[in-house]
Image (tube, rainbow, N blue to C red; front, side, top):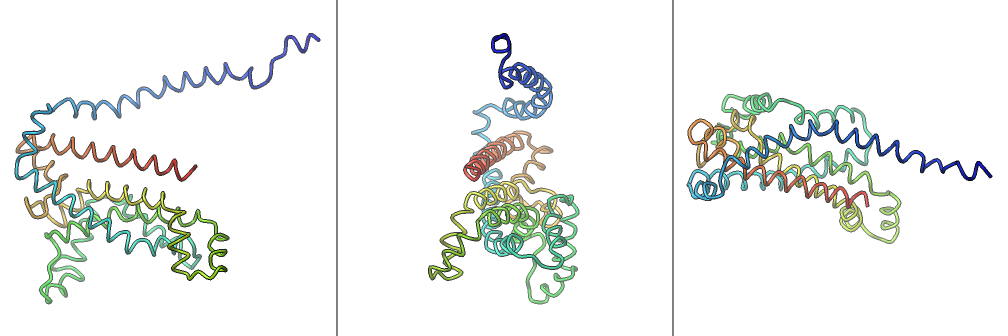
Length: 276
């Protein structure tokens, strides 16, 4: 009888301990959270809404925003078209040197952007491996809008490929086999079964690729240059504005901060749907 009176369920006894641990973890997490939030808050408070609207009316700001949106959307489209087959291959097939291919795909994520820019310039510049041949045909890539797109693809495409590969791998093969037994062609199975079931991973990859392409700087400035109205994207305009016009740098920084935060928020929603 005394055991029934004085003993408590094990889970109830551990609640105070867990509560104590969670409180301490929150306190230990505050310095890092404050460090991450303070610069972003300072950026938002540094420029007034009126100054933001006035700077948005400047032609150079319009051009940088337009070039960034145009090139990043082209980058996403080309990445989805040419990256999806590679993602499906990595997700569904085992082959020799697969780990090597995976490392090659992931390499631009950890490679310094400046190194990527130099590599692209050596490959596609006028005196590069392919650049000399292209120059004979009257095709010049370096320091053109096409160079901006290629730099963005090189840096951002791995994010889509990895996310899409995870999405394709999560689809149960039995579902695809069942659709095939019902008479569906391979393309129909992919379009009606594989794509819908992996859509959230694909959408997450698209959003992350777009955000990364939008913010690409190092490879672009080396391979495409920083020419206003031609190759100057928002990050490059921020870099130039920091030296010439701080209001331009602050305005474009706030715009990119808003776009990046919205993108990450949507990606979190997509991942939540994927888990549910």
